[in-house]
Image 1 (spheres, rainbow, N blue to C red):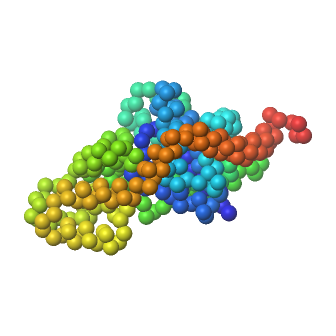
Image 2 (cartoon, rainbow, N blue to C red):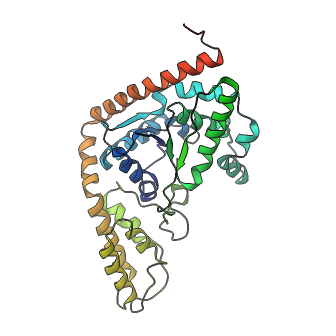
Image 3 (cartoon, one colour):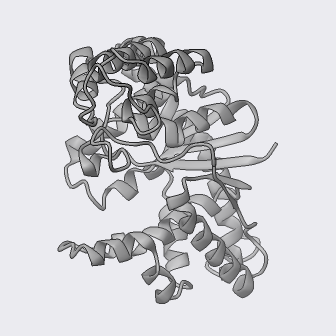
Length: 327
């Protein structure tokens, strides 16, 4: 069984874009692969400077994954910060990684282009820590979106450099990109769904907030009595991810016929999302009543992850000479 690894930052509420772009695939892989999924709280330090918020976001992300159906018996689920070997390996990678490789990273170039004022070493070194996150578990596959493919490529470059200097140690992971998951459109109807654009639909918000977000979806000015194009409509774009082919066909007919307004389409989308996520929303409420259970899952996951990380780091330390052979 091939090993898969992925991490997600605890940066706020989970929205439809997160679910469709990453989480749904993570859950589907549980029965086919040996899965290691972690909450990337160390990476989140590049933007979060509030301890209370970090703890809240981390717990909420754990609740979200478990509510969606992550099975801790099948999947190693843990916090990045509970495995200090990640940071140790990242420093070792820092010492062999050319500056030019990190300077070409999309996130760093984007931050510079936008004139970001609080540029940090952490933001610059981000890919080195990500390489450590990946390589320490020696996975064959890393599921990512197209915009994250470069990070896996950088990890491969760093692995090759380490192997060249110290002997074959790290296999080269392959990015796993689900082509059928296109960019999820946000409620503004223009940009991809992202907290940065404030255009998200937050899955676990209360029903009133969820309705408000859906009703805010930007549409064109086609009047009720005129036919509408479902392909260009953000409402239909989101609906098709959760509806059956027959349901999509029915709604498409309503779009192309006269008499249905966008308000009605938004109500249909709201009903579909409440139906689809109803079990997860209910399960999350139950999990919130037993937070010790959630924390135990993260601790047990960390223990399982640490077994692998310690084994890798023992090999690394011997090869770089910081631990004498046989000691």
